[in-house]
Length: 117
Image (cartoon, rainbow, N blue to C red; front, top):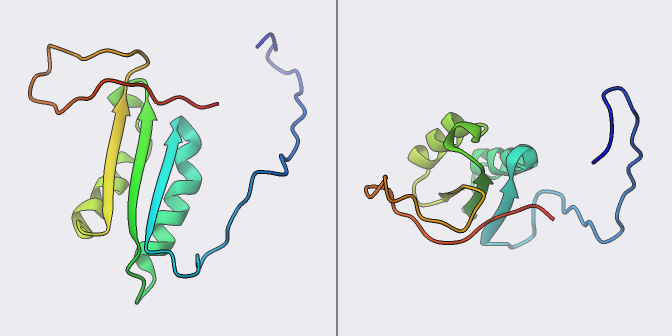
């Protein structure tokens, strides 16, 4: 972008951007995909689903960031994953290129990239 600090930007709602409200009506599994700060609404969904008595919905969060240090809400997400191991699966996608970090053989890695559109 070519914006300078202090300049304004206009945003518009995209009609195809559908936001479903909880409860999700018979959904047994949620697959949530986000990058960077896009995790904020996902955290709200995860918290609501996991904290609702009687809700057994399973969640898989695929969350992309450039570095491990960029992962927002990591401690909370991992705490929920430990507390609800059969209901919350976390998949952290790290990096901004199609590569494998050979200096970290102990970390399960896959080739690919997750980027926002």
